[in-house]
Length: 219
Image 1 (tube, rainbow, N blue to C red):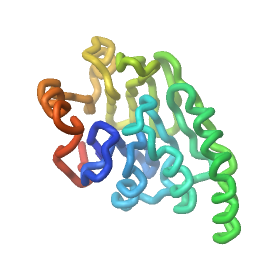
Image 2: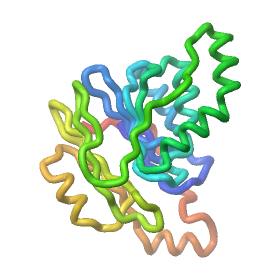
Image 3: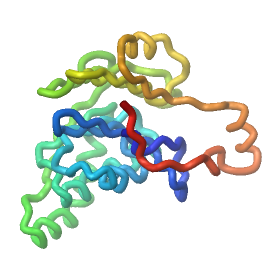
Image 4: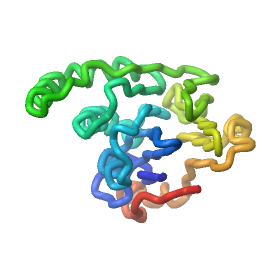
């Protein structure tokens, strides 16, 4: 499910920033956490306690700005306490800093709702190509893509039992992405029409005025 496909850190659009949701055998996996991901996840009707892992491609705001809020709000809605996060450095420091900043809020809510507090999130940082994780539903691997000046920026491949899905992340044209996606059932790829972006940037934000959409299923 495409929860958000709008590029750039521009608020006020009905098409949310980048985020994707995969569901397999009752287990959910989120890739990228642009603004709106938590609301969009809720609108799917998939239980919050189904979420097993979060993956971040790179540290631009339209891909990670709601990572922390998703953890805290999602925890209130039933995220498992053993949820895991994967992404490029410094994801562990970012996570620890956010959890420290929101400790008081989490403690208040834990007392209000008689819940065990979300004290720590298991984070694995990905700096290069190779295997990322594997569980009963999926095997995940990553490659490094070209998205200067961001280093590293990642693309991911998810090999489920019934299908394979590849995500390019934000990247310049790269043969490694084609190799990673070979044989996949679905490739979700970034695209940009550069002349239009340059034209819009002369007078206003290059991201303004893009079309809107609700979450969209992809098979």
